[in-house]
Amino acid sequence: MLNTIDLHMHTHYSDGAHSPAELMERVHAAGIRTCSITDHDTIDGIPPAMAFAEQLGITLIPGVELTAALNNRKEVHILGYYFDPGHERLRKALNVFKSERRHRAEKIVKNLAAEGIEITIDDVMKHAENAAVGRPHIAAVLFEKGYTASFVEAFYKYIGENCPAYEPKYLISPEDAVAIIADAGGLSVLAHPGSLYDEDELLRIIRSGIDGIEVVHPVHSGEHQRLYRSIASTYFLLESGGSDFHGGRREDDANLGRFNVPDSYLYAMKRRLFIS
Image (cartoon, rainbow, N blue to C red; front, side, top):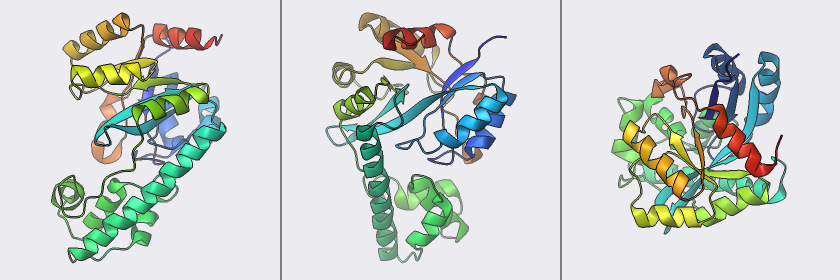
């Protein structure tokens, strides 16, 4: 059987719509046999997914998507693979991300109150449940309570960048993100670069010691893919990719099974880590 591989997807432990069990069922239905859950700044969705993956004959690779920034401003997302989930430095970093996300949500709720919008942090946390809380949970509350006409409106009216209730994220440098993943024995990959970075920015990220670059992604055109394959070849970087599946309001169900990567990508990753 063809080993269909997708190395980028999310559960409701970050900003995905589905539980780990639901995601594994959808992955299996899409014909995917190897995948990685790469939730934002958390790995809490991996343990509950493992049992379901085994039952369905799916190979699940530990993954994460760490949020970093260039010069404390421009966001950079760094994917991690094949790390030790119990590594102390990684665990400490993820705990800081979790507490800082809560702190940011509290600030946004306070900013909304100044705009005459009365929601509570408890309202937000009920939506987040066990997830790493973020703006999507606040947007859902604003929509449900009738403060916005849609989920999306919450972002461009209140909580998006340059909006009255916006608060910046807690961010680390790309160098720190790469080092955290490396210390945990994993591989780091620049997520969905698209047209986000100029040449100097891309070179800084590469010089951070990053192991690879995401080539296959829904936002990447054929031209993007050719460019990032060329960069990977020039700088001896690994190639990676996937659907970046979230589900729910993203309406991206059709992406599962469409943005797959070849076995050669996994082989190169394992060879770099001396995994059989």
